[in-house]
Length: 241
Image (cartoon, rainbow, N blue to C red; front, side, top):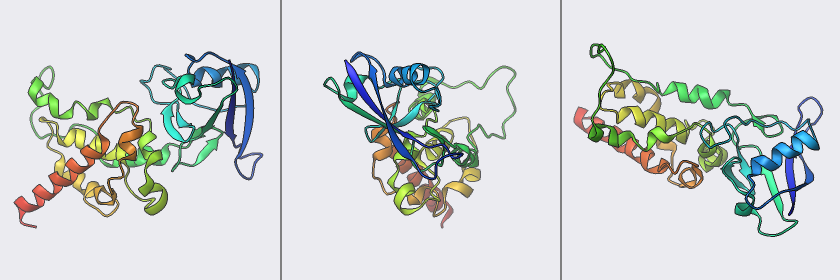
């Protein structure tokens, strides 16, 4: 089948604003959108810029907006977004992040906010000789959050970041904070409050659920954000403030 792929293009060295360019490429319904993009880059337009690495939905590098929804290009089949010969697939870069070129976005701010929640084990206990052991029951509370691949799809889909508060910490960042707050081995909750318990932290979230809807790993992002809110409220109540 023939597929028309409409790609948002932007080269900061040549363009003043983004524009769309359309390519026609042959493909099968079971091809991935990433396959089409790579055919375009290899055989039609070598100037097309995009990120891709593992191509198996693990690294998260090829997150982009496909027909208006945040998806991984390597996990999105042609038949998922078009159902007829000559159908159009519109591909755009993620939102809420500045575009470096074409489908590549600047991830520096995303990862600066990620680092601000201290996404690592914090403990005052002696380091064990071999490894930090954890039972299956102790592991269960963090199972969902550990699926995060930091693709930034939820960050892009977030209407709070886009329309209300660009300073909002971000869904993925809060998920990573809660992953460690719920870890039975961690003691860093109070340290993370400096970032989480602020107007730009968890309290900016308004439960739009867009983050949960677009997560390619099926993480219950909004639920984890609300769990973080409840943890902070419980902590305040116990402290009497």
